[in-house]
Amino acid sequence: MLSSQSMKYSWLLFLILVFTRCSDIHDDSEKAVFTYNESNGITSLDPAFTRNLENMWAVNQLFDGLVELDDALHIQPLIARSWSISDDGLTYLFNLRSDVFFHDDACFVNGAGRRLTAQDVDFSFRRLLDDGLASPGRWIFDPVAENGFEVVNDSTFQIHLNSPFPPFLGMLTTQYAGVVPHEAITMYGDDFRSHPVGSGPFKFAFWMEDVALVFHKNPNFWQRDEHGAQLPFLDAVKIEFVRDMNAEFLGLLQGQFDFMSGIHAAYKDELLTQDGELQPAYQELVNFQRSPFIKTDYIGVLVDDSLPFSANHPLNDVRIRRALNMSVDRAAMVRYLRNNSVYEAVNGFVPPGMAGFENPEVLVEYDLELARQYMADAGFPNGEGLPVIPLSTTSDYVDIIEFLQHQWRKIGIEISVDVLAGPAQREQVSSSNALLFRKSWLADYADAENFLGTFISKNFCPNGANYTHYGNAKYDELYSSAAQAKTDSARFAIYREMNGMIANDVPVIPLFYDQVSHFIRKDVSDFSTNAINMLDLKRTKKGVK
Image (tube, rainbow, N blue to C red; front, side, top):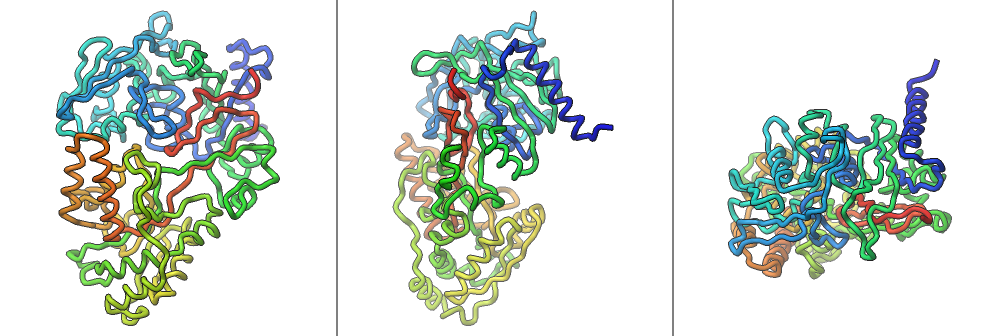
């Protein structure tokens, strides 16, 4: 009798044969099929439920939005060939392309995909706000006024905001804003998650959950490259769901997978030198592409002296926090613990490369003598009289915390480490029951506001993500003034000032900015690696076509 795993792969073989026959692939070796592994699985192919990166990558192949980000994190037209914003910042007008068509599907008359219009954008956006759908992405329309969507005509769509919010256009680049046809929603209902119909470069073929997911090339895709060649170049995309990370690594080396994302601790030293370069043994087999990631790992400090838990604690003294901050040797940390696969967080909370944040001056340096002076000025020379400070973390970061424990002991600060399961640690932090805590912040959209808005007073947890309870009236005023700024340059200047305030007041101790790390087989070209770690296969080529 076949095991359940054997049965799964028997089904996979059957489906691949069907895929081959239905696609008229007589010699599969002539077709460019890009294969990658998704060890965490995929839960939905509906853009309304692209809460995690695994879903985002798949959905990005199937659906288009009004706008998208390029690899430099600049907003570019997609379904919208152009847009304009009113002088008061309240009205966004989008002029749509007339050559965008939905994928062929049984939900349409005769199965032929129809042209995408402004009515489809309106339907998709209103659907996202539907309480019955309960989409985790409805927040992208928080700035939109009540009944703020307006179809002007088939090719013109308007959005009206409650108040100016310059990052709004960037929020429309998220996969939540993918446009769907109402016919498919009517036909498939909740099963749209596994019967997606979009207008993107690839169209859905089949999905055997936990085994394989296949997309075919969309022959009617509207977009062309700079030479006029129709996109995409790949014939198909196949996603497998191997849970074992070591098996994924082996699959990359053997050619089962065309690329691998991220660096697992199990093979970190095998793949990378201590300087963060690809080991010579693999340089003929794969290319290593990396980019700064819009994610910051940090130690948070509860600085609210109005809470019984943190009242009168020495951490409320900014001099103690500054001493903690500048006694961290970030260069050693990222080299020895992360093989230089991340970047030192010396420029404040907002990571470099973020739109609206260009090359700020260095804000923190490793300086033990100055740290000791801050300790003495605060009344705790060499840590004398300072209580042991508890720090909350999860098991994935014990090595980092042990490093910090050693670093802070040099200036007389002792910490005790509380290692919790992820959900328990999140609950402890969000309920303001952790004085020091390890967290990370990953931006939802590529604008520095997504990082800096974390620290405004109205976002105190549990009402928001201000876990530190940092409150500063001037900071709140700057945040409000940034929304009223008439130009991006003026807004970005305010952002830099806000980032400097956070660095100066130290409600967080930034540790490192994360890195996107991609390992790509040598026969794959034009593979995009970007700071939002979005998988975009429109221009990717495999082999010689």
